[in-house]
Length: 310
Image (cartoon, rainbow, N blue to C red; front, side, top):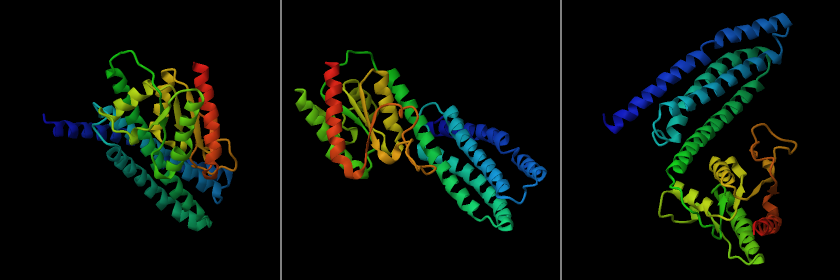
């Protein structure tokens, strides 16, 4: 069987598994909606916005469950993390989410007009978009986790020499370039001068590794005296690079844009945030106009951490 045929067979298997999951998740939807209506009638609230909200939440829950089912089905059918791209799996997730969104729109639009509660359709659209974005993030996370796991397995045990290149894990989006160039990189270099070391900042997108990018990342993390992780924009690769460093016992210094603080108020639903597995750690919060302060605090933190290790 050719490589193309094998790939098509895996896609077919994924779609078959997904079809079974669809029957389980979406199959009972109509009866569950009828139950919601019956319960509202019993409560004499069938003309209230509460009834619409309950129907909306049921549809959105189904959309989230189907998005997860897509990821699970394709990963189960895959032999390697490179069988299907993020875009390929995400396209299937979008198909499933949009199918439920359309059904919800047709159902809720009639009730919304009757009850004078048109705002719920805007809520539906916004929440559906966030589910789509979340699905892409989950796919990205799952495939990255698989790749890193494979790379670690293939990594031959060896004695690692720790150098002076501090590994920087962060989003490579252009909007964060000033954070790296005006705060993180100069802070690493200044902290090095203070403790008598020629520290440099290593970002994989600014290097030309001779090996694969994944291997370069693992090698550089293993050889780093410290990892600086900026968690802005919720990039999955940042979380896994930081997590890999923690597993190796590396010291970690974390930063993030202030609007990612999960404890900040007011906080809008769906706003970017630092996730629960790292929000208990010390994080230096920054804003676009406080990069000088970020640099100063990073100098202190990095120098203190590396002095402690000496």
